[in-house]
Amino acid sequence: MRVAVLVAVGVLAAFVVAGCGSADFFVVEVANIPAGSSRLVARVALDDWPAQSAEEFGAGSGFGSSSTFALQLPSGTRGRLAVAVEAWDGQSARSSGANLVDLDGNQSRMTVTLVELATPGAATYQRTPGMVAVPAGVFTMGCQSVTDPNCETDETVVRNVTLSAYEVDQTEVSSAAYDVCVAHGRCTAPFISSPSSLTAQAFVTWDQAAAYCTAHGKRLLTEAEWEYAARGDDRRIYPWGTDAPSCQRLNFSSSATNGCRASGDRVAPVGSYGRDGASPFEALDMAGNLEEWVSDWYASAYPTGAVTNPAGPSSGIQRVLRGGSWLSSAIEVRSSRRNGNAPDASAPAGVTLTPTENSTTFGIRCGRTQ
Image 1 (cartoon, rainbow, N blue to C red):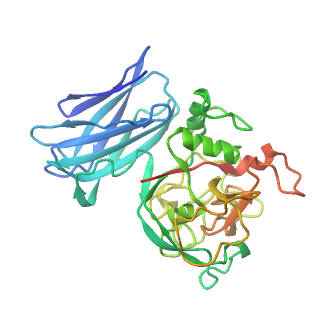
Image 2 (cartoon, rainbow, N blue to C red):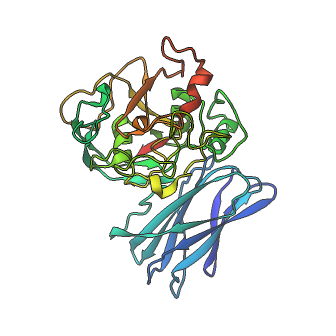
Image 3 (cartoon, helix red, strand yellow):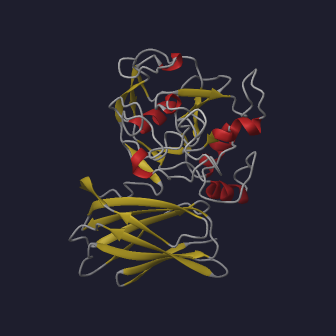
């Protein structure tokens, strides 16, 4: 078993992941530390080593505007590494931040930039490593033709939805992260396996997506949670607003003949488009790249009337996919747009595609209840 220990050395500290064999150091720089902060509280998670507890270090004379600690990991570690840090002043958390990276052998450092908390308090872990927080709120779900002329029939029932607070993965799951889950026997191999990399993991069924999330103490988002995380409460058409999609914001089919990645791997590495295509809650790539499985069964229309924390139909034939993919048009990457497919990735009747071919656009993003 491996355990994490934080050893402070002045303003330099090290998380030591104890294990056999040689080790590598991964450096974390913490930026924008508020003046007067007396300690930093850090939490680290690796795919096969979930975060269980916090470690902290302090400075008797206070920190400067930045500080550094190192993670000591077994040599050759692969998978998604996520770090969340809070700066504390006495008994109150003043600011927090988080960042993540998919380890493929080439990364050696990251920066976690802290942001001041709206309400300083004593609760740690304002943000779970690798996830972004979505506060409780009310939003209008569905497509309104007065603002969006491309509404499709199954999204035209508009209703107010109230949601409790939850968290969502900041990016789609990478092939490197999924491979770690397979190697530890908690996930099954996708239809097509490729070398571990930062490329988003495609070729998965609904059951495989759900199993991956469960293995990491998470779950698939509901359809309502996915839409709120993608567009917020201002009825925007796309995660970034109402401007037309472009290859600077997302990976999609930008014309009848070419996509944003016209050669090589059509699926982009996770987080490739950064803040330009981010949602109001800083979730990345919620439009394009891979369409993402959610927990709901697909129905041809939403029920009418306001609802709280809807979970969708109790049964069905298809599960819902959201967000569109590298193969999708501008209309198909709208945040209210819906798609459905059999959970085993088999193609709809009349479509001559094998499950492997059909799942080339199917990916994973997880959530969790706060």
